[in-house]
Image (cartoon, rainbow, N blue to C red; front, side):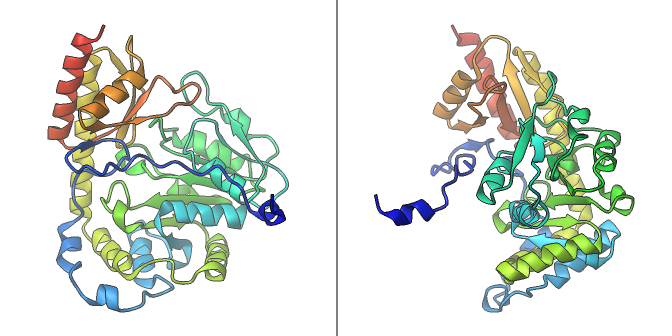
Length: 352
């Protein structure tokens, strides 16, 4: 074997949800928003300058819009190509200790991939029997902490008191709270930014703002940590955000009424869906996200997953310890969820 192979970085890559080639499906496997973005976004998307001109490397207009929306200074906002980019930059910037970083054992499966890629030592802390964080596990010596709230794939939200307990007990390391799903339930950790100088809150446009295809994510923290993120970004690629994302992202921020209407609609559909499938023998973990994590009393999740796929309904199945009998089901439109419930009703009745 050629010796150059010894110097190639080997990693186990992140596996995203399946993107079916057939468009005639009900796609409930990647937590996309079933509704389109704000009409304001659609009104400006045909502007030819969106593609002709270079983007602003500082992403100034989007940074300013986000700062105004969240009531912070522009120096406290960092934007990137989806929250994945923001999180990866955060790992690279903040997790440089010889001590292991900590995150849950059941969580967003990109965390261990980034840790391996950047050669960051890490420990996965087991969730308790109810799939909740064990707060005391995060009080020991470590090189940093990251966790989603609400968690993925469980959808469970940890109270702000629990989040603050983790932050205040780790003053010497950076704590990243990944709030990709916070708009669908729970209280944001953003008010804690002014209280703790080691907190970074990461958000995304992909879920609640229906803009997964444009890849817009951002972090809010204190100016010192945001400067550190920007220094790493400019050392890597100054033009990380494309011009359409910057312009259309600003338009989305400026239509708060539409944003809140669609989020409310998804929450209402989620609650109705949970009640309907409970009558079919399903139990769902308490969800504060735009998906539910469901298990059936007698039918293996893997079999339901396969049968649904055969009927052009895609949900997410994780063949992993402790969660291999659960399905993660994104919340679609009322009509899509009605079709899925109809399928489940028939499948459960006929299952032998």
